[in-house]
Amino acid sequence: MININKHHNLGNIFDKINKSERINSDELLNLLDDSENFNEIIQYAAYINKSVNGDNVSYVVNRNINFTNICYLNCKFCGYKRTANSKDSFVLTIDKIIEKINEGYNIGINEVCVTGGINPDFNPDFYFNLIKSIRAAFPELHIHAFSPQEIFELSAKTGFSFEKIFEILKENGLNSMPGTAAEILAPETRKAICKDKISALQWTEIIKTAHKMDIKSSATILLGHIESNADIVYHLDLIRKIQDSTNGFTEFIALPFIASKTSLKHQIKTGISADSQKILKFYAILRLYLNNFKNIQTSWPKIGTELAVQSLSCGINDFGGTLMEENITKSAGGNFGEYLGEKDIISLIKSAGKNPVRRDTLYNYIQQ
Image 1 (cartoon, rainbow, N blue to C red):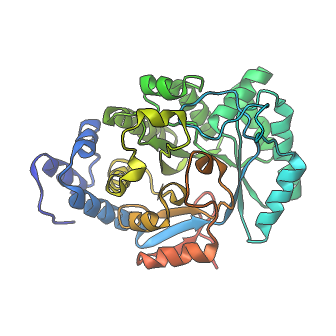
Image 2: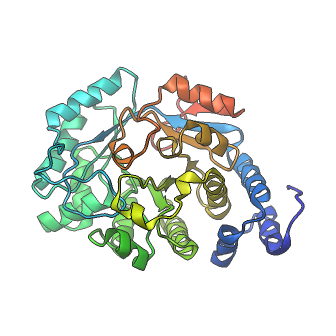
Image 3: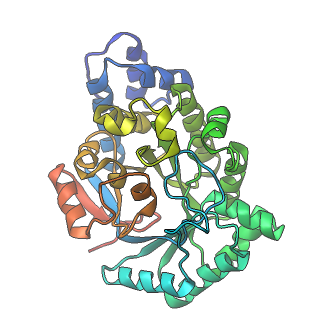
């Protein structure tokens, strides 16, 4: 139990946390709205995280590959999308993707994460053959690939159900999937920033189908654009309910919005990426609310290594991956780099007084 001097309306929330009781949506909104109790929220999150994960902070040695930036969607938060006629558009062949994965083997990766823009010229066989080719070349590698949006497009083009698409991908070698394309799941705000994307209902159906077929996924939120705190509550409540139902999420990842090279930047007064205290507070609130998640990941490409290290004292227990390249954040104006070596990650985790532990995609610790 933790004893902290409590203030006004958060006292009951802290009492519930002390009793290991789940806080509700109204209490979550109170935490998000609160502007006075930063230190208390951080301390409670650190306390809960220590009870769940001790002093361990995990990380994964992985290779991130974005195979095309050509996309027909028009998401306002995106600086990555190009048309086929853009001078800097690109498409990677399967052979080139295999070559890039081989580069990752030089640093001992055990996961490859593969996603791309929604290129209207792509045949579904490209996706199926890509997974099959990676599996043939790297029998032991964990393949973490294709967002719910990509699964939706495959279903639409083939006429196959989501379940059938996953069945084919699993047969070809898919292991898990990123829970991206979530952005914000509150319907009206979602329409305002990514009207062409799958709906919250479709995203939920695809994720639940994946989990039912034993394809684990991450869960994400895009934070600090035009969303309200009520939108955040809607999103996190839905994520928590899905996890209650499926237990299929491996971790939760909050992605602070990088605005500078996006069309949405004109609607942002001061994004959360410019307010380190808001980021740390939000990470802490995730630990308090998402009590059915063991793992909550920081995002060093979005917030930088210095703030990522600070977040390890705010309820965070995972540092993410080495990545090697990360085009989507960079294209939106991110300037914290695309690669951290394993030794650098270990050093950063230790600098926070934590115990670095290498893991695989499914959060099994790897002995070193």
